[in-house]
Image (cartoon, one colour):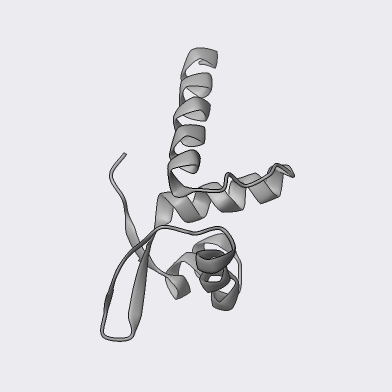
Length: 83
């Protein structure tokens, strides 16, 4: 799955969180940062959504972005097989 660039403010609106929370995920969980333009840092939406999903389900958040990629692949396969 290709990364989807998003700012902390836009991700916060989508997830119903405070932008500071999204930014804190960068250090706490190593949320994947795609780069910066001027004062805006762009994160990978898929990674942020996975972090949020883990917390909503009461699961541990995988330590690395690569671990979250594997989790997404596992969940996607599980959902496709259930359909």
